Each structure stands twice: as structure tokens, then as C-alpha cells.
Length: 414
Image (tube, rainbow, N blue to C red; front, side, top):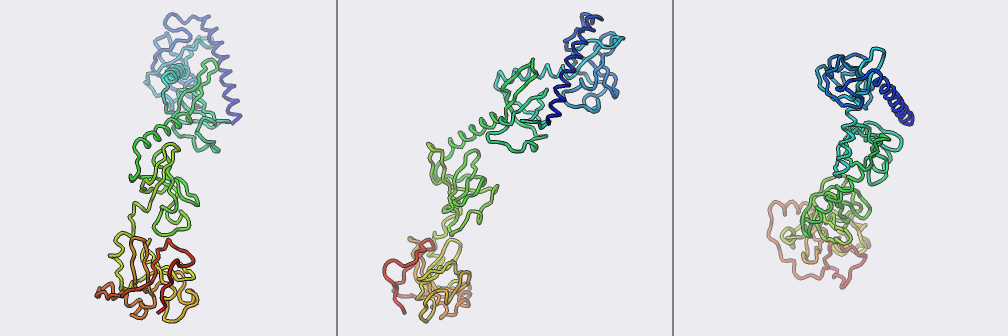
């Protein structure tokens, strides 16, 4: 990269020396009133060779543009820049050689227009689009009609470790410094990104309200939740608001880059904080749960947790019921692990449903007495009449109440 920079500086110095010599020669030959050094003329390409092109500018003879004067970019073939018959703008450098050949530069003509364009853009605070043509020490070179420099500190709001991926990209930049004499144009991509981000944030905050459903993208995952990009503003989706079922880590449900629909739970504009919920979009599985799980009926479930006082059985995602240790078997059980293990699929009979407090009490003992898992198939196909289970003192618990002991009265042993 240092070699390219040194080579560029050397080329600029050589060009300046050549232009000075051309000026002296031009004064000796005299270009006439129609073509003076520094003029920008229109001409037509009449011949292309390996060394350059001939351009008819209406003078006594055609002017020549050497390969290095065709473009501010590195040129291998003249045909990559111009074609026969093209009408182009050229900058009159002067004469060269004993025959006094008119020497022209398309590069200088393009750069003069580019400087004017950059000055106008800086004056109007305009955003330009520019392709990145080179990665150099300390930043990027962008083509804005000439070589514009984007320092590494002005590429993005944060520190950019690797500049290579920018090569070939077209970026949006703003002109922040121009010095024609030093042939320096400093550009900033960071300034544009910051302004665009601020505009997006203002738009989001002007529209967002509690209770709304928003489309977002998972930006990052943490142990306590996920940050969701709502289009310029990040909201926090806490792990407790992700699922009606208990999960250990957000990665069980989400991955970075995944699109999601979330509900706005709380807003704090002063602190710029947004609290989001995912489970609210899916609906509460405890709604109408009493219509799906009838007292006295037998259902399939999966053991999801063991406690000293019983086991929790998942009837469906987000809906767990408690089988008290006294309802595990028709004999006295010292610990639930003597009867079931986590992951077991068992038959349970619904003893009591308390939808308001999200609690369902279950019995494996009674389900087994009535046929176990085979009875669940009967329930699903024939839907027999529900018998009145009679009054019970069995406590019902939701999966979220995973205490190690039962508050209140202990159920009777039958």
C-alpha cells in the first residue's frame, strides 16, 4: 500500500514537471487564439493506438492524449476509456516534440469538472455515490471523478478492522475538505451513516406506540434476551417474553438475522428504551384452556420437571400441569424419580383447571387405573361423557410456579 502511495506521488510530480515543460514549449510555438494551455475543448477521437489516442479539436493537426492522461485510474488499453468517434472534453497541456504536436489530457479535463462538482456538493451539503477503487494505508480511495480519500476513522461510526471488503463497493459519502492546490479531497462515509441512522430513529419514534405489532430482525443474542432491530432503533426482547414455555437461552428460539414479529410492551422515549414481546404475538395458550382440557378426561403429556412434591407435565407448549407425588402411583412414593423421568410420555387425568391462575392439577394414578395411554386415544376419538370427579383438595400449579414446596394445605392421600 505504501508503494502505491509513493508511486502515485511520484507520478503527480512527473506530471507537474511535464506540464511546466509543455507550457514553455507552447509559449515558444504559440497555440493561437483558439487553443491555449489550460483551455478545455471538445474533440472527436479519430485514432486509437497502444500509446494513446488522436483527437481532432479543430486545430491544424490532431492532438495526442497519452495513455497516462486518459484517466485518473490505471489504464491498460485506451479502448477501455474511449472509442473511435467519441466526442470528449480535453484539457490543453501544450506542445511536445520538435514537430510541435498538440498535447491534450482527458484526465485533467475530467478532474477540472470533478473539482467543480465537489465544490458544489460541499457547498450544498450533498451526498455523493462513489465506487471504492483502492485500499491504501489509513483508508480508502473513492472515485469521485478524481481520487477522493476516505480516512479509516470516517468510514463508519465504529472502528473498522478490515477495509478489503469495501473494495468494489459503491458507498455514499459527503465532501468535508477540498484543497485543489494539494489535489486533496477528503470524504466521509461515517457522517452520512450517522445522519441516515438518526433519520430512521426519528421516524421509528414518531410512529411507535405500546401495543403495536412490529416487523423486526434479530440483531444480537445475550443470556438475558435478544436485541431486535426495528429499522434503525433496537428494542429488547427479554427471555421471559419470548415463549409461554420456559427456555434456558434465546438461541433455542431465535438466531441472528432472523425476521420476527414482536409486540411493543413498554416505551421509554427519555432513555431511548423499547421493551418487546414475542409470545404475545403468538397468543396465550392459557386462553380457553378449560375448553381444551376438561376435568375428568385423560390426556397425553410429557414430563418436563421433577420436584420433591411432584412432577410437571407439559400438555402442550406453554401449558404445564402438576402431578402431585400422591397422584403418581397407587402406592406410597418417596421421590417422583422412582416412578417417572424427565422426557417420559405419560397419561394423566385432569383433576382441576384454574385458568385464571394458570394452574392445572393432574393424576397419573387415576389415568393408569383407567387404561393409561390407551385411554387417551379413546378420549381423542370417542369423546366419552365426563364424570363428575367430586370435590377435591388437590392444589393446582402452573409450570411457572416451580417452587420446591407446596404452599398452603397438603392434599389428602387417597
